[in-house]
Image 1 (cartoon, rainbow, N blue to C red):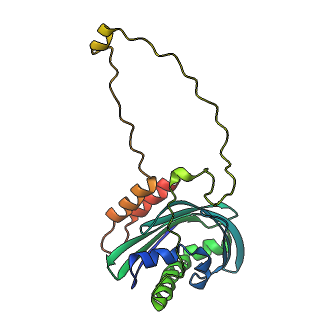
Image 2 (cartoon, rainbow, N blue to C red; image 1 turned 120 degrees about the vertical axis):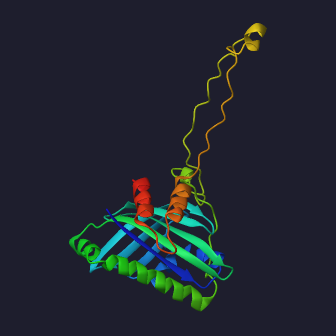
Image 3 (cartoon, rainbow, N blue to C red; image 1 turned 60 degrees about the vertical axis):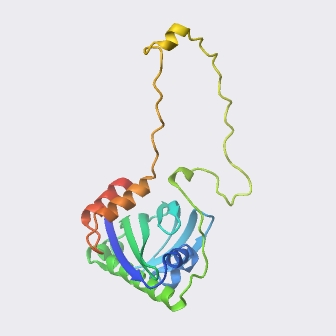
Length: 233
């Protein structure tokens, strides 16, 4: 597995940078080698790319999306194996830092050669630079999708689906309540201590925090990417 990490500061407010990035069908306008992105629904996109002379098509799934903060994805079909996270940090009211981290597996000789020579890193860096030029020239996003997608949504019906596809669940079996004697309830042994349910923080929340905590200035450390790569397995 290989990793790519790049960042860029764009001269637009946080919500503008984030809103534009949610317009996946516009990616070919600033991403090198991306021929077309077709949005299937809120979580899924179909990609057609031509990189190093090799044409590939694959599908991706958004696994975590929090407005004005992050978008995380993974591939679900095709020859491309890729997972990534893009985060958005306000620098001030008019500037935003966009951080991109990707973990991927080069699948062909051309891609492996591009990875070894640093071509892929330069391509991603160029994509972010072109995104900066793209959004700064316009000054505003061409659209926006500000819905929330959490890891718990995976496997749930798409919000855009007209028909619910949830499986029918059997009704729970209610057992008769055991009668507790007054003397038993009064004894410490008879009582069951109340246990609060453990908090279920999103794994992407932790990943984003750890990447930020491992950063030095504007450069993401190798430890931050190691954490991302380990969590994505």
